[in-house]
Image (tube, rainbow, N blue to C red):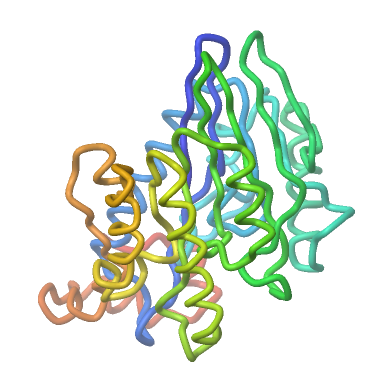
Length: 306
């Protein structure tokens, strides 16, 4: 969900992180690690252009932690310093509407930022002005369902030259009616929206919650001219079918519901959803399989041979 926004007044990077995750009982395929390396390079490139970095919450795919971890994150202290040094960092409060795991991560992250010359500004419900550009941060909204144990996130609305862009990561649909109302109230011209986690249905998320997420996304698609539909929704093998009702609702009002790749004129390349097939169609090298077999501690400190 990392997104770069440039206005005549300011350059902003939102959620400067990337991560892989376990799927189908397998660690990521080498092609996924290659894609992660490309994303890491792009995050550093756009961070170097940015004056402001926004962190919506403290899950590790939405910020870059300052330690070495190679299996899932591909991060290091040096990389975190490159991204955040001497920036204005607008971030989620670690005192209110936060679970214990994110509070700990957020405390460590903020302590690190202070050692590299960054300015930290707590964002919950706040408004910031950069010249004629206005940045509005939402009050905390649930990471999915209202009762989600995954915590809360902040949504960002950036207004410049009578246009509004909104970034709503990890709202999972949104599943929450309160979150849906908050999005529609802002009336964005373009919305980056984290969709429902179809791949977790009947595993960690109930069918009713998924259906509520789809229903709320349909309502949004009918009211927002361009919706970039992303993140959890595209982890499912059947994501193209599962988001079709949302695309259809948008088209009925001449609105667009597209992926980030499609917004950039590219074909979606959802490697994570294809992991099982990747291992079958593109067997990894012997050196990669040897790395795969390392004990956990050694593996986390050793880059995968890709």
